Image (cartoon, rainbow, N blue to C red; front, side, top):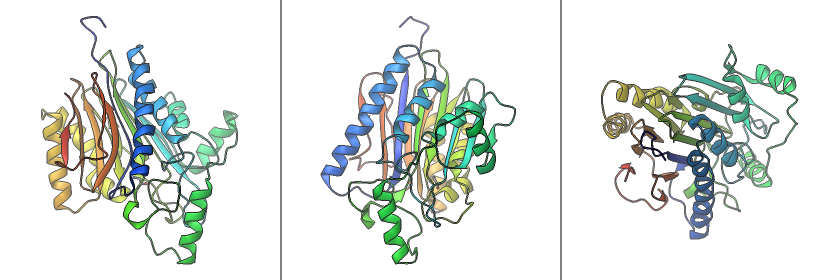
Length: 319
Ligand code: GLY
């Protein structure tokens, strides 16, 4: 790396929730997150752009049935999967996304395709048309576990207001239910930032409900900072969390201060979510109001994660 190059930084998340019970579950989730971090970080070290890295990270997380995005997405109240995803390139400061798209493997690929379009956010019908134009193969992201989960909920007439975030090989226990999304934030060797986020939604929601993941509330990046959120979409929208943190950094706060202030307000408002963030100087920060944020990072020296984190609710992983 030459003297004028930036040390790349990376953080990914696989959702937010309450504590993950069962060590087997934690180990498997950790292994999966670390493998993805290593693969995406290698791309950044090889000179890959932040926007390419976050798309790659999202593809890998979408392909991992454990997480609620792409394969393994939760079902909505009518038993259908509708997914949402967004990409924001901090260099061009362009946001693109798809809302409630079905029958494809990687919703993030559509968000990437839309970066070059004049019309950059498409909902269900338009996204389906784009899929046809691109000749994208039809794919069913449904897993047996998610179907079983939905059937169980149907028996109880959908009393639960959301599905579990992590599929752990057996039906989700109440203790591990959560707020599913996946997201990736990266700083590349040229000092450019990007954020990408993808979700199957809350699970069991009304048809047509729109997630925060394909809004600047849930996914936002500029040349100063980039943020991806996870948690209850409505709470994230009400706080406009990702944009709120980035704007505070733009106005002069450090990333840690911007995140801390935003999470103090969120706590006062009894919000339920988490966020991962990186700024242009390479600070890596995450925050949460929920019990657990399922995240892993590479800070240029080592890979780490938040899975056993019992400390403060806001942590700076820069060093
Ligand atoms: N944050 C994901 C959702 O609520 O849809």
